Length: 397
Image (tube, rainbow, N blue to C red; front, side, top):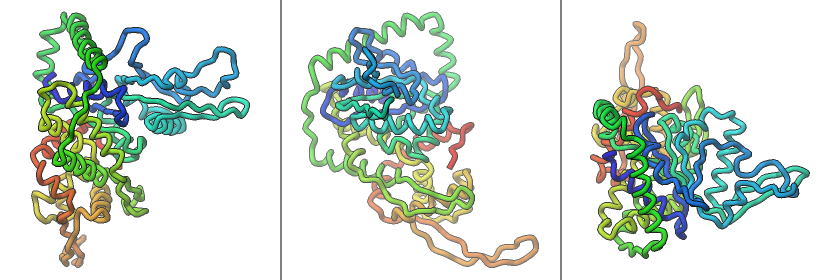
C-alpha cells in the first residue's frame, strides 16, 4: 500500500487508545478489494487479555442484552469494557446499511452513547442496565455505500472522521499486478506485517504518549479546520419530492470535531520524533476535506473556479440531480457560504415564449471559503477520488 498517511492515521488511532484525548473513530472508505481490511488486520492483538475487539457484526443485543443481570453469572459485553480501553476493528461496515431499519436505529443510538462513554438499556422485569466509563477507539472499513448514512442522515452525530484511500492505490492494473506477483506470499506477508505493527504499538503503549506542545499558529490552524467541518457538515432537512428545505440549517458546534482533530494531531506527532508539525497538519487537512459533505464541497469548488454560474450549469458540471443541487445551494446560502444575483431570461418552452428569472451563484468571503481557497489542490484531488469511488453507487439525497 502506497498511502502512508492511511497507515499513520491507523497507528495514531491505536496508540491513543488509553489517552485522555477524546475517542477517535476513523472510517476508511474505498471500493471492495482496495486493501482496507489488509491495512487494519495487523492491528489485532492476539495476546490475552486482548486490547482489541473485532466487531464483525453488531445487533441491538451486542453490547447490552435484554436479559436481566440478576440471572446467575450473566455478564454483558459492555460490562467487560468498563474501565477497559479497547480498540475496535470492523472490516466491513457496509453491512449496517442492510440492517432492518428499527434495529439499525437502535445500533446507531448505542454507538453514539458508546462514543460518549456509556450505554444503557431497559432489561427484563423493568430493570434498567447501564455501563459507564467506556473508552473505545475504532478503526472501521467500508465501501462508499456507507456515505448515504454518514453524510446525509448523520447517524453518528459527527462522532466519526472519514478517510479515503489515496487514488494511486486504486489503480486497478497496478493492483492486479501486485496481487498476481504476491499470490503465494500472502500468509507470510500478513504474519510479518502483524509482527511489526504489534511490536510498534506495544512499544508505544509501554512508553506512553509524550506531551506535545502545540504552537499558537498550529492551534489556530486546527481550530480553522474544525470550523470548516462544522459548517460544511451541517445537517439539513428537505422535502423528498421538491428538494425544498423544510427547516432552518444550523451548523454544528465545532467543539467535538476540534477535540477529535487535536487527538489526531497528538497521536500523529507521537508516532516518531521526526514526525513534524507540517506532516501531521497535511494528514489532518485531508481528513477535513473528506469528512465534510462532498456535494457541498464540490459546489464551493465549482463556484471558486467559475466565479459565477447558474443553477442549471452547475448541475451539468457536477452531474447530479437538479433537486440535490438546489437543496445544497439553499443550504450553503443559509450558512452564508454563497449568494446569488437574479436576471431575467427569455426561454422557449414548447413553442411558447416565457420570461424566467435565472439565479447566478457565487461564493461569499466567509472564513470557511477563504480557508478552502488555501487547500484548493488537495480539495480537487479528493473530490475526484470520491467521484471515482462512487461512480456506480450514487449518493441518495
